[in-house]
Length: 196
Image (cartoon, rainbow, N blue to C red):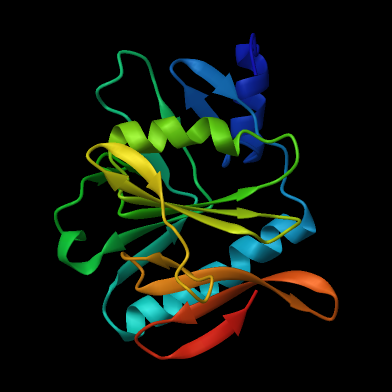
């Protein structure tokens, strides 16, 4: 959002309404609260994958953590739905004041109508986030983007339609349940399938 008065930003901070606000190369972006369907995707994937990652010591998942671009001359950060950091990088990754100063291994974004999810892709690519999962809130169609030679490349589905996220060691695809689209997640190390 352009031309946000400092008094509005200060008031949002004072009331705790700024937790999801972002700054894109010096420009303040205010995010509206997520819808119930949007938050359901965030919460269900977070709970499922957090337990799975802890169980197998893959790493840790964090919510409401900013990913910062320290190379930018202007303040520049995004706040994905959640971030994943591999276990072998947890002690080395710089984190300060609610921000990751180095790229996490995986970020999740849920795409809702008229949001800025697609505009965040180049940022995550530029700072070096290895994989980005984007789930459409309404269709539950997942995209997995993987960094290949500093550029994101969409992960192609396997013969069964699953898209693999290397960092999480999990597969994603859309399915249907009771006539509604659902996100299906196959946890590789457990061999179990879950519906979100």
